[in-house]
Length: 430
Image (cartoon, rainbow, N blue to C red; front, side):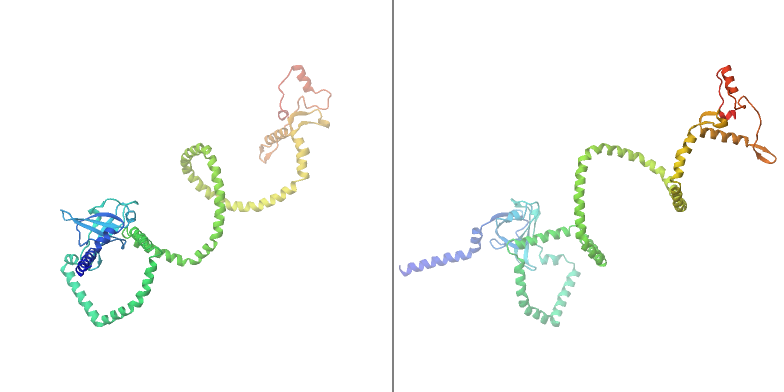
């Protein structure tokens, strides 16, 4: 091959290599595997095609593939992300353009997950997009007095650096490498066994936790304050708490046995519940009617309470009396009760029938009735009153039954001649 042809080939190779180098980012974006998402921003805001990164929780997951300006001044931004990102950002994600540093510089698209669990599809609308606020825009919104104070702050910072601050900063920068090297290991360990998923999931969980904690203003402060009071109470009662924890295993064992027994009781209750329900409904009506009765019984129960208080000394006195009565009852047992239950009981309950000189006198009434009549008549004859006081009055007289000892009673003979007559009771005859 001639030198001319070699030169031409070399020039072509150099041109192709230059083109490849100049379009390296575009080629890498086109050859990158993943999924393309569209985001409608109010403005493109310094996003660079094939250069600006796309991140989720500040972890790079893709790159901006195109920025198309719209007629209304907005921008339709296409991003190419990893295949698993649409499922991670959920159904309603938010897109934010953020600066890589506080002072600006390069910008990236931050995808914030939102909505229900699911895979995102479609376009993120302008309502769920945000663009950054530059430092100059912040300074323009500040009042002149605030800007003047900011100037004094810068002056004071300059004075601080002049008065030893610079040397302290130099020492910090000198010690920083030795400190940052272990910190690098710590940060590397913080990424977990799967750096692409562990740390993003941790950051995502912390973000969700912080969102829940800060959802209601002042609630976290109240929780921390209450936690301080709770910690103080626990510290003051640490001995009782330690004792309770030590007894907790045995308590749990007892509770486990009780719950097992309760389970069997609940099974039986479930089997009988259908039969008990009508009674429970009627019991509800009964309780409703019982309420006014209990209300009326309130004064009575209060008086009964006072009565019981007054009765307490009497009960205290009855205790020794009951003990003595017990000894008396023990003495009564045996021959005494046998005599009462035997001849005395038969004599009182049997009809009266005379013997000896009174063998012709008898009565169909039991002896206790005759004895009661005699006591009643004795009460009547003892009601006689004279100047000396009460006395028993006795009036002498005779009748057909006065004569005794005859073979035939005159009174019985008269009854047989005149026919049946109403017979007076023995009390009236006497």
